[in-house]
Length: 246
Image (tube, rainbow, N blue to C red; front, side):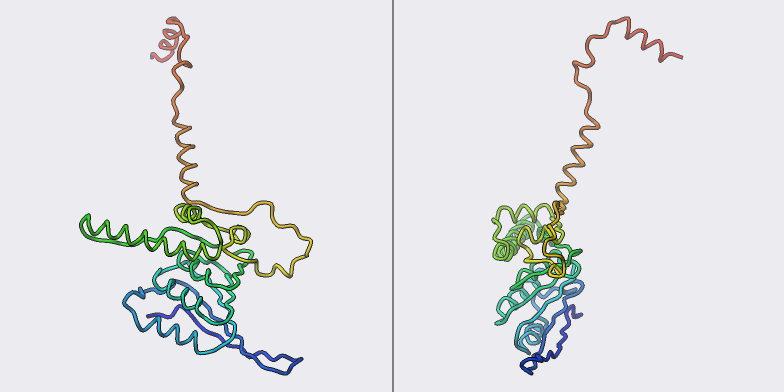
């Protein structure tokens, strides 16, 4: 199993109290588990062992397109059970399974140029109709469990979260904050206090784009109503026919 996480510890000295503390930082980069954690007892145990090897608040940096939902669920649960604050910082992308892990943050911050994406879980299945039905039911259950994490963090209704997942929704930093997937934007404290938030936030829906494209194609292919073809005299039609002869 190729590790997709890395810990980095840094000792910080409080000059006023002359005390030293260890800042613990976890980096989650790339695909969340290139191999499934299903039936894997070793890798999740190793992650938990490293997580619990220290104490105090931790910072989790995420830049991942997603991956195995089983691994994401276990990491989410471990971070939720961690007895100290967990600050999640998204410096690139937190998509798919990675967005689930981000929901475990006591506080979630996203880069001004960061992105988040939520969509429905997917799998590959083989077999007869009964096996296909089992796969459908399994995906439905997985989706419900993912919605649980989104609902706890955002406070949005399950119906709206389900629609966002159906549409494969991409959010920029401001939209992620607006919808509750993030609590703030990295570097915001460095901006002028009187700076107004953007008037427009970006939410990209794959389904909405496809539907819009189909509407435009339908409009281009639309035939003229019959009423527009009525009212021509027979003579004018013969004249039009003569122009086409050669």
